[in-house]
Every structure is written in structure tokens, then in C-alpha cells.
Amino acid sequence: MSSKKNHQGKARQNTVTKGIKKEYSYMPYLLTVIVFTVLIVFFSLFHKIDDSEVGIMTVYKSPTCGCCNKWIDHLKSNGFKVRPINTVDMQTIKREKNIPIQLKSCHTAVINGYVIEGHVPADDILKLLSEKRSVAGLSVPNMPMGSPGMEGNRKDNYKVYEFDQVGNYGVINKY
Image 1 (cartoon, helix red, strand yellow):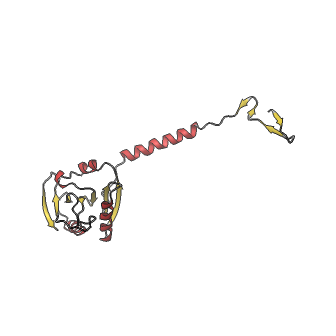
Image 2 (cartoon, helix red, strand yellow):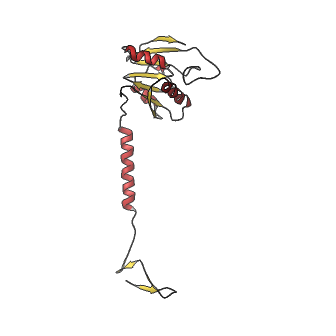
């Protein structure tokens, strides 16, 4: 090991040990970060969320939608346990849940095997769950003002629809 004297006469060591210069490699750390990133992306893309947990409503919504969050507050204030899932691919969710095109709205929820599309009032959902009807779900199409989560200075008339797996639907309530 070579040494030189500094200005105070003390020996200082170079980074050379027995003729081999020490180099610090970040490659193992970089490789670890890359592997973990790939695993996280893989599991987030291919892991299906189990939205069939009894008694908990899974709500798929855009991360930027304020009315969806207000509807979730409406559900919670009516006793529902809610698990919100932010997604930018709502069309895939709606396609997977077989929602008729005429009944689509902004958010899609699932509870006890039923699909709830849009700003459906909690009372209609509770009635569906208690009656255990043979339908795929309920919908309030579009985003009518005055529906839960869409409160404001105007109140539009709107309808609640039930629908089946093959696209048939009918009105079950009017507001």
C-alpha cells in the first residue's frame, strides 16, 4: 500500500490496494431495483382483484372523479363498507361486467355478485340485496343532477334500471 504525507506530516492512504484500484459498483443495486419494478408491474397488470367479497362494495372509478367520491360517501353514510379502486381503464371494467351500452355511467361497483352502475341510490341497492333478485345489477345511466353524488342547485328526474347478463333491462324506480 502506498502512502504519502499530507501537509501535517500524517500518512494518508490512496484508494489503491496492492496495485488494484477499488471501484464501487452500483450494478447489483440497479439490477435489484429493475427486478422489483418488473415484478410490481407484472402483478399489477395480471392480478385480478377479488370483487366478490360478501358485504363489501368494490367501486371502480377514475382517480380524478369527484362525483364518484361523493357517491362513495353516500354509500358509507348508508352503512356500506366500500373498497374504492382507481383505474384509468373503465371501459374494460364495464365490458367485463356486461353493462349494456345504454346504461353506462361514470363508475362501476360490485357487491355480493351484483353490478351497480352509476349513481344508484343506496335504498335501491339495499332493496336489491334484501330481495336477492335474479338480475345482474342496477344502473342510473349518465350522471343526472340530483342523484347521489351529483347533488347541486338543480335536480333532474332520473330512473333506476335493473339489467340481466344478456342486455335486457327495465325501470324499477323513478326519482
